Image 1 (spheres, protein in one colour):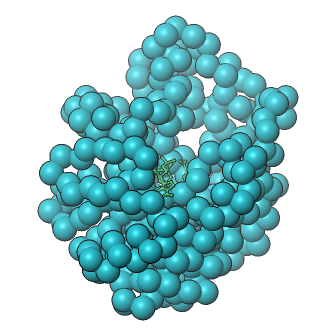
Image 2 (cartoon, helix red, strand yellow):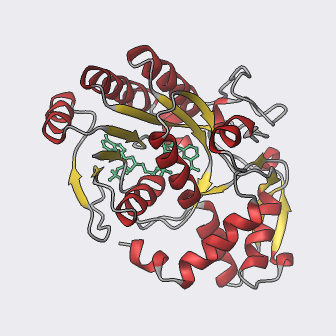
Length: 301
Ligand SMILES: NC(=O)c1ccc[n+]([C@@H]2O[C@H](COP(=O)([O-])OP(=O)(O)OC[C@H]3O[C@@H](n4cnc5c(N)ncnc54)[C@H](OP(=O)(O)O)[C@@H]3O)[C@@H](O)[C@H]2O)c1
């Protein structure tokens, strides 16, 4: 059985939904936001409660765990460093210990933000340099996970998709602005390799199936600025890309510092899978198809 933490989050819900579709045995854990995913078993748990976590893991006895749960709000983490540390370091460390003792596979979801963003195209061998509390805690989480469970898998990611919860991923927010006829500000000085959460979910399950271990950069194959990405969202959904206007992150007043170019080199994951990661167009085509096919409405709670 696969246990997915953070099942009410964007990636966790996509994972539970896909695993369910593939008729795998899967259980999802949420915390404050109960979600429904067709046919899937979902349970509430506060992973910061170590006793409760141990009990749940013991009762369920998963053969694989995908740990998606985290404090992901970068500005919130900056203002709550101790809580961010507990959720993003103490919790994955405890889960890594539990999975190591029970011989369960562990996949820990990390982030492209572990890099300082000075140059981009980062490979797994490149030195991280986190510039904010969120990124620092996620990197510490990686290190703790490997210390407690040296056979764990770590995937550094960045993604968009259809949220189960009532909140917007980057692409959903862009679409909302376009739908309201508003101008969409897009950072032209921030570069990333966006991937659709559902494409990542497929890769995550494949990684578990192949019994791989260690660090992988699992991202879209194409580096783009957030400005360019917003223009591509507009084109995909039949809006005028001119509705997207370039802005500079350097001019925005954000609480936490952000890295500028976190594009990831996906050579290692492509070699492991024997295929390339999807580019921006392929991801957005599937994103649009998921709406047309009713998935976006079904996953929304
Ligand atoms: N979104 C991105 O583009 C992005 C980029 C890079 C890396 N990542 C990483 O990818 C992973 C998934 O991100 P996401 O965007 O899908 O997450 P998300 O939508 O922000 O959801 C976070 C999840 O963590 C759960 N959670 C938080 N505190 C918890 C606790 N104490 N006990 C149990 N569950 C708890 C939340 O549960 P409730 O909501 O039910 O409370 C929710 O399911 C994270 O590890 C994140 O660092 C995300």
